[in-house]
Image (cartoon, rainbow, N blue to C red; front, top):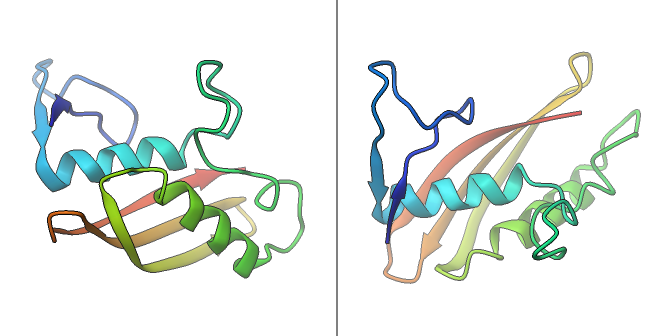
Length: 120
């Protein structure tokens, strides 16, 4: 599948004000990133899409096991992912952000790796 590239700031245009296309593993990673940065229930056309923030928000100390489970469930919403290999969570409690690094395997055997910053 091919789609427009979205950068880490959510922009479609590159520094030259041009659009880029992504495909393959990069496109699947981008799809997973969009899932992780969308709160479950936020998209009215599919209220089951996105990351369940119940265990990620409004807590003084993050329960890493519950957060990892929610992130796993969000990654597995991507139908082209057959396996989640690893999820690494790096919380910054002062800034109230969570860096999520993931490694997964696509149905075609491609290894997918990326990281996403989740804000409070």
